[in-house]
Image 1 (cartoon, rainbow, N blue to C red):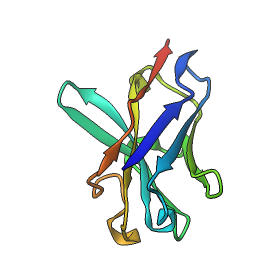
Image 2 (image 1 turned 180 degrees about the horizontal axis):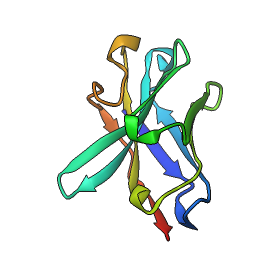
Image 3 (image 1 turned 90 degrees about the vertical axis):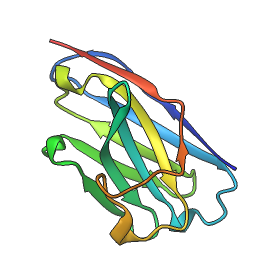
Length: 129
C-alpha cells in the first residue's frame, strides 16, 4: 500500500505563490518507475490533471492552463514531489490532490493520460482577487 500526504495549501491573494508538497510512503520500493501527479477538483465528480512528473526520467508535463506559472519537481531521496505555483489566479482555487501510478512509463505519464492508482487526501488552495 502506498500513502500520499499533501501539505502546503492555504489562502493567498491573486498574483502570489504557494508551494505544495506530496510525500509518498509505504510500499514505494520501485519509486523510480512512478508517475507522480497533481490534480485539482473542478466539480463534484471531476478532477483535472495539473502536472505530472515521471520519476525515472525526471520529465515534467503540464496542462495547457498552467501557462508556465507552475513547476513540478521531485526530491528522489525524500520521495517527495512539489508543485510550485506562481502568479496564482482566483480560477486556481480548488482542492489539490497528489496522485501516483506505480510501474508507469513516460509516455503514459501526462496530465490528460494518467489514470491514478493512489490518491492523497488533498490540500485546499484558495486565491482571492
